[in-house]
Length: 329
Image 1 (cartoon, rainbow, N blue to C red):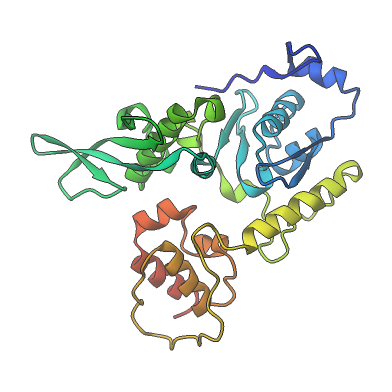
Image 2: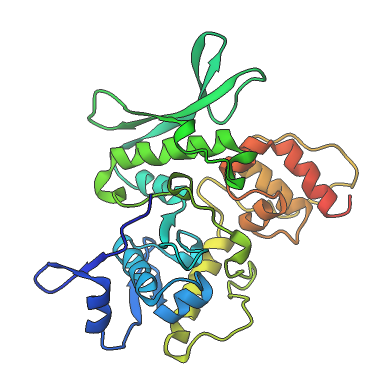
């Protein structure tokens, strides 16, 4: 299951041309500039993609990745798109984060919301549970999604089988419920808005594993890439602009969140976890308690999770305790 890497762009007449033809037509000028979905500037070159995101990718695969990002207005500096290739003998895979699906769906004026969860066998019954929760003794067998659009009489309904996606990779071993829920969510939103999501897949659907530690680390305070190397002269300004976008997005509160209240003192160490009203409330309380954690991304990293879905599946109280231990409490 690999995304087709051949057709990436069109000529002046609208005819699809191959990436090798497109690269030749560029005459060696491979700097591509575009705006992401937030209308912020992004600049990429083949060299920067290979050096920062996928060292084993070929020039053609890197060029294809650039064109996909441009066409879909994805910003790889904000972890919206990934070029995955760990074996030089295998084809590269292009995947996106599931948050891209959710955020773009929410931008549609006719979008009324969605629900997603897991399907379990409980005795002789098949039960749909919302979220990534199921009881001890249940057998997890799949995931489900329902989404609503204004003017539609029935919701978009999708169910997926766990056995089709769980290939016993490390990605799935401890988070099967969270992973299969993500697959159902991505497939459901793609069915709701095919013009926006056709051709876009998340890592759980493609059977690839993103090595987040291998990705270029971004300084959460400055937004600068901490790879110890200066970008190529040709696109240095592009990295500066893209990293400024990363800094703005990481320093700004996420949708539905509010910044930590001013003047709130740091609670005494050794007390029990406070009560959390929501995930944004948890993040705000963590940033208030441990001021060195200044962004949501830093909080998620300290909790050893990649996104809010994983955080919810883990449990906010447990995450609080782990962060406290990490800070020597």
